[in-house]
Length: 573
Image (tube, rainbow, N blue to C red; front, side):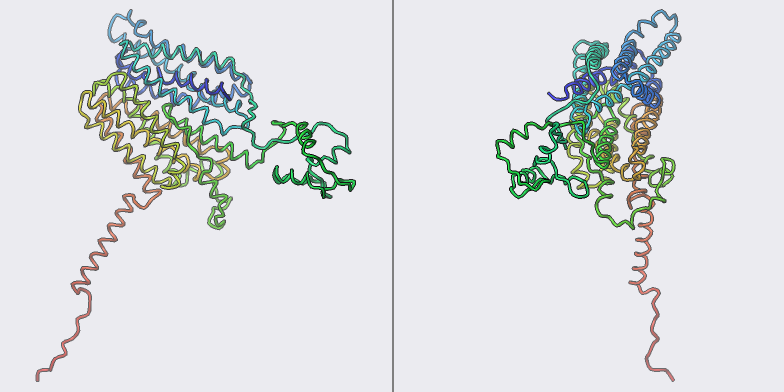
């Protein structure tokens, strides 16, 4: 199987992430007795710490050229940090009072959370960088490798839920994480992070001929002829070259005619070898390839539970706009284009777009972080039902992202982003009216299908719109993508977890859902104002214009405002 190491790396890495991290909030609540606001603070640590840890470890790996060693060390420390959470309940038993026990528990959990965020979160980017090195020129195969990890995440989260329900032991999440971590470290330590040569995936190989005498090399019909300018005549195609070589009219430099039988030609062709590293792709091809890979990596960065690698955004609207023959007079000149991210976000439409994505990041993460606790405490769902939510959401995300290119082409970017907002509002509102018991838990599991569609529509179309809004200079450096990820998965996720924890603890789950609905509605309004004609201000102006027109029409029908003709009857004497 080609590229076996990347597939195994993603499989075991996301088996880890699908076991303990997704159940930590429930473990904090059930086993350690933490409150909602405390859980929100702990869950919000990872997005903020990752902003520092990810660039630090990835740059260190690139500078020292010790990719696999750093990956193994970092993941080992992350495993020790998260598995040590299992022993906190035992470590705090010596505390004399309940208050001391609570303070010690919070302190230990905070330390382990910071350590896990600092060492565990960067493992994903490190694996991404290592896999890209293995793929070499075949970076468009990245999605096929990453899909194994996402499938592993959904299966692991469901499997751990069933194990917990059967054994009645929540420590099973740490056992599963430890076993998967050991397998990951073994694979990472035995992997050489350098390009693999895969014969089945060659784009444009360069034909290199062994050393031959000058006269024989000139008479070889497979070597391009040189014209007077000194440049070689490029091959049009393989069939053209074959026909050209078999022609009796083709002459060499000395004017003699060369003809070659098919058998001899076959033996000559076998003397040639393909050099996979000697060729250099065009700058335009490299830029497109890097850009396609950045889009795929950004999309998978949004959430760990998403099977989103089947997304096909190889021809984003921005590149189509640059090569589609658009009138150059309608395009902003280079002097007017923003040269950095600060100038970019000063534009009202761009600023409102990133604020919209930040609000949606807060809303979605607020619901996801406390969903397991809601299912367990409010609806009485078992661990198996909670574990199935990740698998159910992943299925819809896979289907939606698989057809995302066609959906974007048919419905457009704006329609899909609006759809993501609407489905989120419907799903969150449905949580507030669910009946308690197994029936409500099953309905909640079904509603999680909407989460897969809403997230994939919002994020997939949002990435493409960020690509459209960014000028070519920022597209090449992916600064707009970095800002989008920071707003959604950084500031948005962290703020959503903090706010959701406080509201969940003080007002309950329903109040938190209403807050999420409010954030989503406000985000939708901002997006409608900036990108459509269906915002509140537009509707007010439309209502005002229609009211004025209706008033003028009624006045016209009643005859108001028109001149009354004089009475032209006979005059009285």
